[in-house]
Amino acid sequence: MRMIIEAGEEGIFQSELWKRLGINSREGSRLSLRFERRGLIRRERALYKGRWTYRLISKRKNVSLRSIADCPCLLCDDIDKCYEGGTVSPISCERLTEWILLLAKRDGMRSP
Amino acid sequence: MYANINDEVLYTIAKIIGGDEAVAIVKEMKNGEEFTVEDLALRTGIRVNDVRKVIYKLYNHSLVASRRFRNPETGWFVFQWKLQPELVEGFVQSMKQKILKKLRIRLEYERGHEFYHCGNPNCPKVSFEEAMELVFRCPKCGGFLRPYDNRPVIEALEKKVRELEEELDQ
Image (spheres, rainbow over the protein chains, first blue to last red):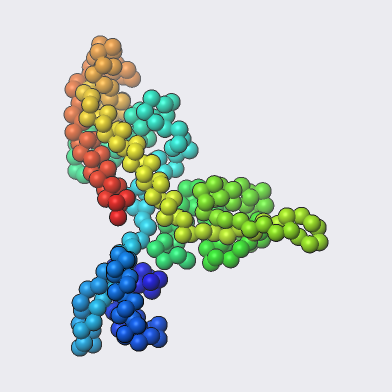
């Protein structure tokens, strides 16, 4: 499973994987079907070296911080004390406001 | 290294939790070995007390685990620390959830209020109720307050909320 995850979005050919693991295709096919049934991978039919096989692609996405990387809350010491009506609030936080305005600007919208 | 966490994400999180010192410590620990605080201090050149502070911060977020044993010579307990990169995913998810919650609160507020602004980019916008109390004068520069269209802000918030909801659903 780790090898499939490491292959990323590209996936790995089933036959290639069995070769690397040193197991036969009968055992391998059973294993990949089991992974698919458990919802861990998706199998796509593909032609590899002139033979039909399956490309095994992990459904597990890499952990990414991209969507919140520049959000000020991420580095804020008050993140757990920040709530509506609190001394620190998402409604009045200046740093959060600046970030939201930046998002609006990036989206090509108007901002004050 | 756990397969779906890359080093960059791991170091960013270390930096968020404990700054550059945490990054240096996590770099030493990422191969999965166990270390005492003194080992880490020697390897990184960071003072033992500072290493301990960083380790406790990482421990508060469950990113490191400890194993305790007794030193047969001194009879003292020795703690060995190990990085738990598999819990980074949980940390990221929990940060996303916290941020999503705050953005939803802000979105509701933006949707439910009318705003006024003087046009000066350094001045804050104020709600209609506040503008009434201020007799439509900017609290910062004294300029005249005019209606402010917050639709771009609402749209940006809606987009980010959707993005985070989708990521958390996966």
